[in-house]
Every structure is written in C-alpha cells, then in structure tokens.
Length: 343
Ligand code: TYM
Image (cartoon, rainbow, N blue to C red; front, top):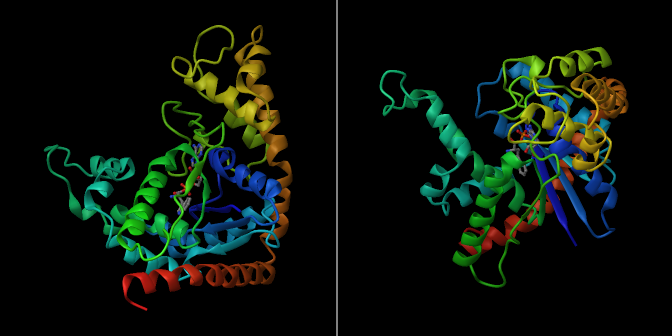
C-alpha cells in the first residue's frame, strides 16, 4: 500500500501554480486511492517561519489554508489533514535527521543558493551579508524530509520546484537506513509524483515560475479570484509578437504557458490543445484560458467562502487531524528512538 504525503506553506491563498502543480494531484490521488492506501496532507507553518511573517496574517493564512484544502475536495474522513505545528514529532525527527545530514548536501540546494545570491553585497560580490540569512533557511529541506519520513511516506505529490528537496529526502532516508541498520531499512525512499503542469509560469514574467512571493499580484491567479479578476489577469498575460499560436516552451514561454494551463484545466494533452489553435490568435486563446480557469475555480471558491466562517468546525477538523497524524508518526518515532539509542 502507498503512503502519500505532501505539504503546503500557509503563506496566503494558493495560486494556479500551486493548484495545477500540486493540490489538484492531491485530490486525484485521494480519488484513485486503494482502500489500504493512506493519504496525509499538512499545512507547514514551521516552514513559513523561514521568511518574516506577520503573526496576525500568519494565523489567518493558516486557518484559510485548511479551508482551501477542504474546499478543493480533500476529505478529512479519507485523508489526514493537519497543521504541521501541532505534531511535535516533526521537529524531533528533524533534529535527529540534522545530525546525519552532510552540510555539503544542504549547500547544494538551489533554494539555498538563491538565498545566498540575493544577500550578496552589492559592492563586493564575494561578500554575503549573513545577517540577512537565518539558520532555518539552510535546514529547511531537513524539516521537509522529517515531514515525509515521520510517516514513512512512499509517494510525495509536488511541483517541479520541490524535486531537489525530494532527492535530498531520499538521500537522508538512505543515510539513516545505512547508519542505523539494526533490522530492515526503516525508511522507504519516497518517490516524487509530478503533474504534467509541473511548472506554471508567472503571467508577467514567463521566464520565472508563478510564485506567492512575487510583488506583482497580476502575475498570479488566486484560487479565490473572481471571474473579472481572472479575465483581467489573463488578458494582461505577457506572450509574444509572433503570429498565431504554437506550443514552443523554449522560444514562446508565455504562449506555451497559456496552452499548458488550458490543457490542465480541461484535462487534455497540451499538444492536442495547441493543434486546435493552429488558425487562431492570442486573443481567442486568452478568452478560452480565462473561461477554463474561471470554471475550474468556481466551485472551490464558493466552497471556500462557506467553510472559512465555520470556526468551530475547522478547529475540530484540525484537532482530529493532528491526533491522527501523531498516532501515525508515533510508530515511526518509537522505532527511530530505539535505533539511535535514545529510547
Ligand atoms: P509551497 O508551499 O511553496 O508550494 C506548494 C506546492 O505547490 C507547488 N508549486 C508549483 N507547481 C507548479 N507551478 C508553480 N508555479 C508552483 N508553485 C508552487 C510546489 O511544488 C508544492 O508542491 N517545501 C514545500 C512545502 C513542504 C512539503 C513538505 C512538500 C514542506 N514539507 C513535505 C512536500 C512534502 C513548499 O514550500 O511548497
């Protein structure tokens, strides 16, 4: 049987990239799961702390994320849905894994390298302003490995940007297995499960991914955007000045991104979709993409509006989820403590 685990940071309402790259796959895996399969989805508040967060906004975002997961169809009777910060086994395991993780592997993470690059001294490139970097940014992927390994997960549905973190999780699992090899290997090596729309691009700068942290709000579509907002953002999407529509991600990233989005929203192959636009222009494509996204988000948006006000229901779901998660991870932690000599 499979153990599916994934997480999302509570840093605001998810965007189309989060949805097409990861969340829609969570729901699909839940739908197709066999009776023995387990599904565990976490709202990872500790990961969010690696960047400065306003406590009031974080509290609201944390609760909204739970509403979003329920609104898109994660079923708490079938899947475990919980707040990472309510299961201390994650931090315990994270510490233990920190102690077997080679520094060199963390230094090679592209997410870390991007942080380093961003904090280089403008006048002297060789100098990094370390006061801009917290230790959490560096050990972030170890906490992610702990999230996954606490449940001995076998499958992890994520977008392309998480692939390297997943490879590190496998490495850490393997190091632990080989170091503490009393009995059969403790951790399965978790597999990455990636959707066809694994990297949805920014609507304003199609050389970078759609991201929650871009200052330009027009660059992303939020799950809660209205039809009018969706249409305006798609209309303003950067494409190119080449006549007609073709799928060519290298030379036409903006146009290809719209085709990818349309294919994902309508559950078709991107090349099939591209064929139907051979004799059409960007205007038609944009209209159709906007319609498709609006249709896709219509139901989740109205569900979200209903659920988010149900404070006591949400509290109950969270409490329940945390208890079930802890019962699950306790089994792993008992075994881990015993193997390392701290039981
Ligand atoms: P986060 O919160 O940044 O993003 C949540 C999920 O959305 C995917 N994603 C995208 N997919 C396609 N196109 C995009 N433009 C795009 N932007 C985001 C991400 O790949 C991710 O799957 N480190 C993780 C959270 C995490 C986690 C875990 C994931 C913590 N522990 C354990 C899996 C397993 C993160 O920051 O995701």
